[in-house]
Length: 218
Image 1: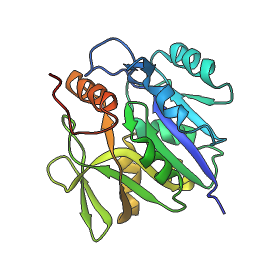
Image 2 (image 1 turned 30 degrees about the vertical axis):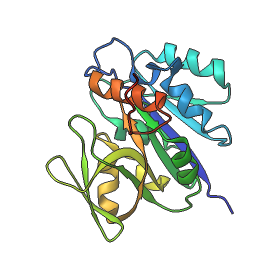
Image 3 (image 1 turned 180 degrees about the horizontal axis):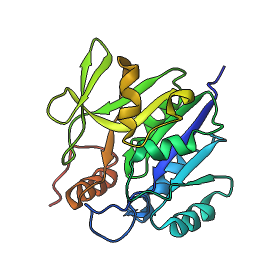
Image 4 (image 1 turned 180 degrees about the vertical axis):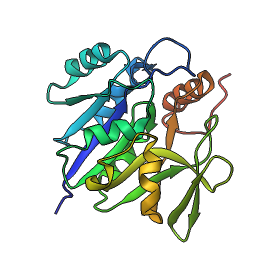
């Protein structure tokens, strides 16, 4: 029996650190906007909600050209709150579980299939690789702590948890998760785009078939 799930994609932020004047979910990666790359992997999910704020009209227009049944949730205070607030807004009348994704994240297609098979709570982690990451401490298969200073893996922004736990929040998603720790972790291959360096690494990753083994072309 499949889990009763709502997918929430946070796309309200301004992407200031990237510095190209567009919300990060619309960043072009090898000819395809980042949000469309994500939605292509969610074709079989009925309840997908995208939280919009900065450049909301542009995001809605791009998404609607690909898929017309997406529910859009407005975070009007996006300049002052975080992804936790966005998820809380989208959690109203959600299914039993919420799967959180960030609009600035590339996920390996095979790993997206795997995490969509999960029927209980988890926190997605990956190898540290972005600028200024939030880290996680992992003990015996469980995340026990989030920290800026120490940790085994990098927090990805991907998690699945009971929707009742997301009804209030104004910080970051990992702060919604902290009261429920320890929580099972899943290792997933991802590239988050916060800075231009992150973006260049993400494009290289996609062009190389979602591999970190970069080949030098003669």
